[in-house]
Length: 168
Image (cartoon, rainbow, N blue to C red):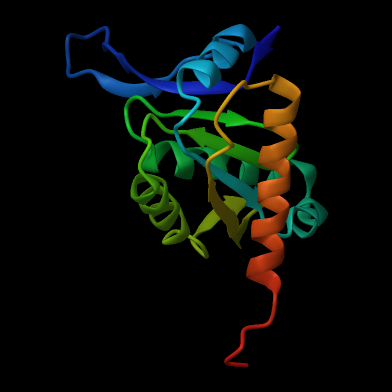
């Protein structure tokens, strides 16, 4: 089974021009191997805010929002980082770093683009992402527990972001 997983790769151009950076599809078993290899590394989880509202414009616009979210994450990710989808409008970057500051830097780079628009159905649609850096507990990694943990981290991050601030 193929999974939507996009590590950066160099793609040589046919005309002999410079290489471009792109992403390739990876089998789910390769993703699981990376989880085990990078068990102490950080993830950056993202979730599209108000995806239902975007889908009300049209499902095509909702699909474009998903593509835009992946592109923003890919642009922020490093060459050895892996971007993958964990749900309908939920995504992760598996970093190649054990440093929290690396994950926080990626999160901030993605967050800086919140509010930028993409075109859908003749409209400019603003896109906002919930972004949560997380590192699963070390030890044995079970696939189902990891995905449950990533979803839980997204939910907790979303709830924290939506909570009223003490300054209000």
